[in-house]
Length: 96
Image 1 (cartoon, rainbow, N blue to C red):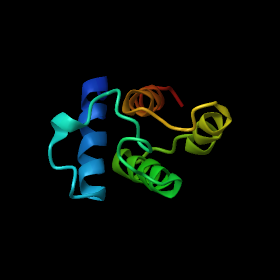
Image 2: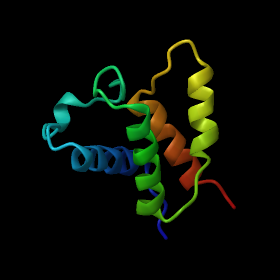
Image 3: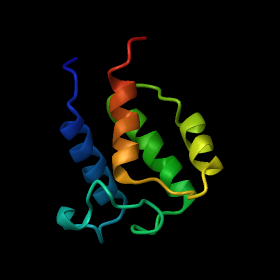
Image 4: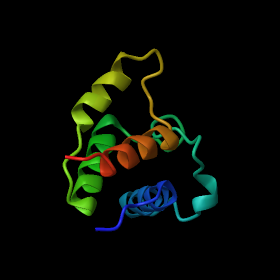
């Protein structure tokens, strides 16, 4: 399997977000600084579904529970697209 670049992961996340909600047709509105909850209106369950969908897409298990728990401990309980993409890219390229 060819290693995914960070840009590839970003595009995959955008495509999966668009599939989750057809209202986000214009990818120009979603930037790396877009917040999943505050800007896109996702609920926490939607973030979990997105994580599950990512794992299915790449056929790779990732520690999303720990990642989301860390986010929950922060003052701002939200995730920017950049943070999400970094997490996925890091775990895609991690050695088992």
